[in-house]
Image (cartoon, rainbow, N blue to C red; front, side):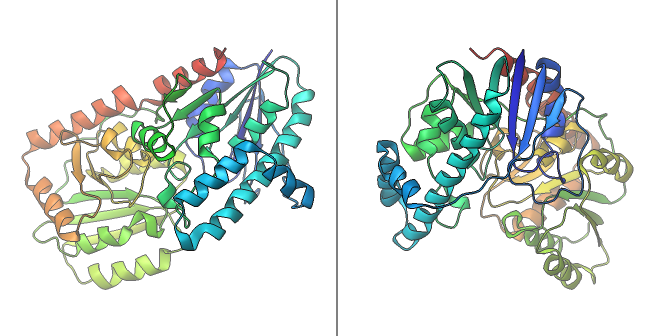
Length: 411
């Protein structure tokens, strides 16, 4: 019997990790049984449906700090090497913060490993442990493997964005990444940029266990809008990282073009961003805007069809490869995006507009106005190329089926 044990943060609870909604059916079709363990669920009030051969397991992961656990940490050569790496790569004023992060990750990884060892002992057959994130839970799988019989289990992980890029964290540090790169049976980055960044950051050489496995979205019919105004869509959490204020400030500079901007997503800066939109855009007769709030992933296709969207915009400060951009291109919608993280692997001059990371509102406004002025043939080329990019690189059916095959055939 082939069994997959999947470690998530929340899935299937809540609304996050929506990419797994596309991935799970493929995994379910390959494995006899799947256990899903949400390691740190924040909201259990809603739970998405899962296939019949999947069992949901709730774990309580505690991180008690004892003298024994601290001693065991410093008795490990690998841990001492990590301490040295931390000291050499941390800003002086962030060293103590990073030490606390490192020790917390170690404690959580050890706790998870102990819990998984009990679960593993009760499961007959071939077992593959899969961490959806390259974090302390992936490290827990490394510790589990060390205490298991040789060949008894295989351990794999994906690597996305926040779990790869050190700069996205207060201390500019992520613990134990060298250990993870070395110890996992497979590590699947969602972008080439993320892979190259982490290998370079940690001074680690590439090996056959390190792969790129792209995420993807389902296919849709291409949209050919016949609007008199330009309908722009953005979809993200309303947090500082996403820089929604740049979209608002750029629209405030757009003249002689009728624009309707829709934003899907919510977050801690919602009220602040909405107030900024009211201040900057409400008096402009050529700009209309609409905040849609949190939209379930399954409902987004209806918005594309109903609203006949013509451009998608993402001006994040950091990204892996945004699934929201894949979704837009699956409808043949061209994209305006900042050249950060792996975005350059999906957006190019044939299917959209790749802007510098430090883009100004004026630059964005010029792109919006220039696109609107294009003839219909040129716009059609952008749409066709956007859909072609999605189909060749980010087609969920292709990508997740290949990923599931890699897992089930892992030796």
